[in-house]
Length: 348
Image 1 (cartoon, helix red, strand yellow):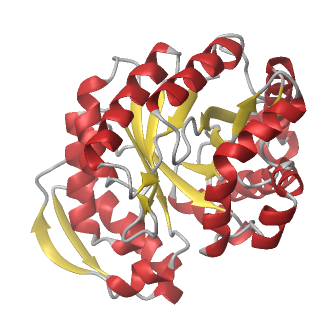
Image 2 (tube, rainbow, N blue to C red):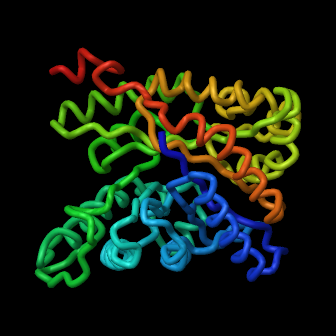
């Protein structure tokens, strides 16, 4: 089992140079602790928190990476971009990172981002599908022609192709059955939200496998994001997790993120997180992860080591602890393979 981190955001009140220095400390500590994926989310004009833009940031971080460590976007709000611009930026990033890029894409959840860029929010899923189609052409063909619903390109040369062939791996985010089918059709894997309960993950994995098999496409284990906190007891872990994360959960709920209810986050935080967060003593956390791996074909597992307001020392301490108590002990853990997960489907 490989592990990775989400680099995350900071309050806008924090100085930007301190924010960047924190990220450098985080990446250094994560690699020392055994994490092998450094990933970054994406927003524009975000209220209260600073999300540094992932493509230039990851290009800078590529110089800090050990040879076996990858970088990725989890996730870029794809429909906000023109596919030619995004394809060339990402191909450049794959070259700069010497073929270590993973491209995570999704549609986001904030309508104002679409309004600012004059993109039709109600057509975001169609936009995402056509975006991936055009980007793949830009990455894999010497010339590109495309006449679609949103984009029109007539026989133009392509000049920046990624190192990875035929393209960098595409991780597509989804929360519902229709989105998981879309991920199966247009991506290489489905990347699983940290807020999605394991029972739903297992159910939707069957949907994904069936769709890939119907199309004759290969199956690759899923990157799974989980919120994770180790404590001396379960109660300690919950208290520590609530202290660092509850404010951000409230922000998510207030801005309309699916799967989160503002009243439940405020009044019953445990009830709102117990079905998706991994909390407890080190052994309890390890066992929860073993249980998930026995149910769903996952890997890598991505965690968030830093919540807005945490300082560098707290973040480094978290990474060292999780590296020591989880990453190292579970390095040989293998999640269930697809043949055992869905034998009747995969065998067809």
